[in-house]
Image 1: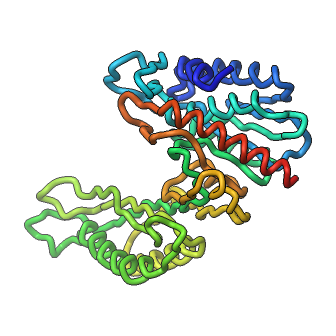
Image 2 (image 1 turned 180 degrees about the vertical axis):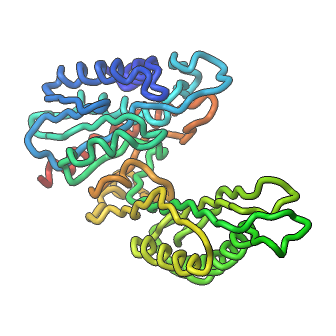
Length: 345
């Protein structure tokens, strides 16, 4: 079965919020069983393998984001010129289709591998959290859209919510109260100095933005214009380039909060991931490699990984698509990578 036809089938399943999770896994499982793979399910995830302890695996999620105002039925793959258009065609059913098609082109007596299909990546990474302890191979291909450029590293994340408390009173007598908003502003000014003078000076050349970044994405405080605010909340997102920054940032924030009435909640704390193996062979077959600053399922597993999938990256866009030539090329790359790791095994 060619990748385009597999993609057509995968797109036909409505997997928004895992709605047709069982149906899409049934299709994938039946396909792999035809090639001799042993399968098992863990909650809404599927694991398949064709040998004992392979050192290479494929990992991908089956869910998609919701859609709005598409020109055509998002669950019917449209082929227009050189584009394959459909919900999830890029993120990441195109990668899944290429991997399943690649299976049919491998000598499976010589090439052993495992495949992991997860759910709920678009919302909470529930699937990868469910099966990460099941993942045995040391080398993982993750089929997220990369326009056929191998990605060998991703930043980590530290997501925090800080709540500042003051003393509420009428705005006509502000000296009788204490503004939680002012306390928050004071903190923001100080953490911004730390970001500019410390974090941005720690360079990690692997990344496009070569340092740990900070973004204060949300702020909410006060109840009315004629009241001194008794409460103010901020949400801060750090994209971590160095693992020791997870500890040093938290230490700095706790020092800054010592003089304030505030609570600190850690929403996410995930280290950066860099493929530690020699992956120079990637440049021989693809002529380039990169890193990314965002999270993927690779962030939740302590394995050597390559993020690689077709493009262009139109994830979460109206009329999401990939190009036919890109889909064909990524099949070639998958086959070469799988054969490379099996020859080394």
